[in-house]
Image 1 (cartoon, rainbow, N blue to C red):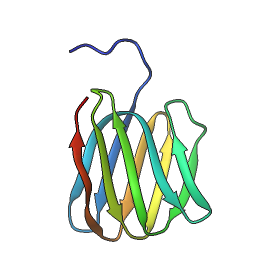
Image 2 (tube, rainbow, N blue to C red):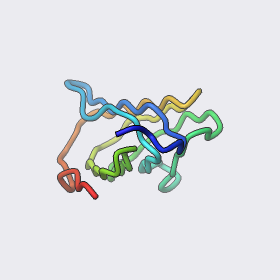
Image 3 (cartoon, helix red, strand yellow):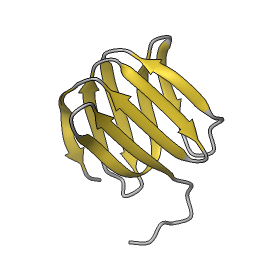
Length: 98
């Protein structure tokens, strides 16, 4: 299905030993050390340290994913978000599709 014109960003979430999730998203929330941070397309560039918590992804196809991770970092620039974590702990929910 074609995108309906809503903005999206490329997201890559990886752990030290494997990729976790990659795709186009409308929003991602990460567990920053200073609190939860939401990132959407066209957000200003950011580099943030992460603490243990949930990464929540709203994909462009309407699917939602949530991953429990430990410490790491998130880097966003030019509508590309890279999240690198030390360990991927579990799926919080299994990619609900709307």
